[in-house]
View 1: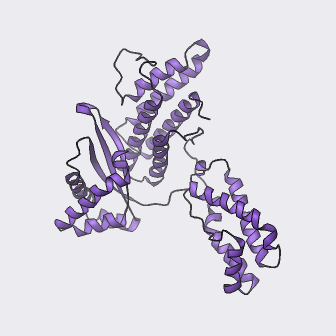
View 2: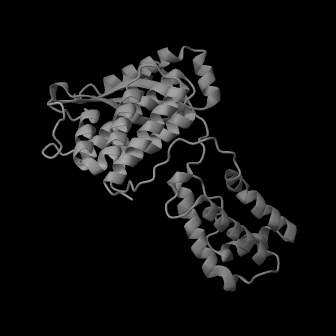
View 3: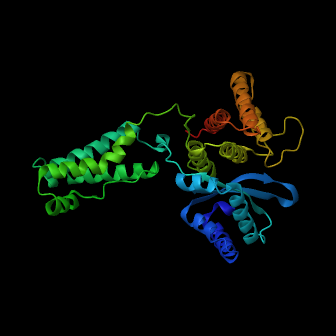
Length: 351
């Protein structure tokens, strides 16, 4: 985990803030305190025992981002980076190579993160909760008749909303809790109906949003590929927020890193021999996966699949190593990366 682990990185961040304060950079500390911070591994150098390189993202509100742009945002990033590197100078094998200040935007809900339930099923369950809450509060069903089913569905909805990182607006785990609320605060039926409607309005609106054509979704089980799963979530989050070239490049670096993790998860040196005789390093994802594909899809009967797998691997490798960065190239890169993860996951029977 290294610097990606918040607990491990916290002492470095705290020391960096103290260094900034001592240097009179109080405004930079205010920026860090108000921002959403994340540290992501973006490259690896296997020279001299190996060095892991990270990018620290400082995610600020849009108004703050606009204000910082007018104050030479690159210089601010450089000063924060210097403090971070001074605070971590005793660590030899991990380096924060870049600090990137980005505007915080509201990412679209990633419905593919739902497990065992569809978007429509979740919508129906929420509608059930709304209807039951209105019914018991307006002379309809009796609480004792529907309490058990309500509690079960409430828990299912709460778990599903947490998976897609949406706050549960309903604090009433039991209809008896809801009873206490309406008895004290809402004497009229219409007040009770209005309260439920307004309470669920933000969540209900998510189901009616127009969705752009999405990048390829993950179709496989990632339960024992934790790092890959975390990186995929971060890729989708960063993709939704990216608006400038540096952010497009950062998404490409994340895609390259997740492909390396994918290759390391399936490659076995003794079994998957290098196809061109070149010794495969632990960051040479393309050669690792080429060797894996040659063994896993060996034989004439797998020729078409093998060809597809090799092309997919090659495309992902080319796109993640492009130096240019436009929105189109970023979307192509993420699509190719997730297609490759799906392909290898299916070959590993992770479905």
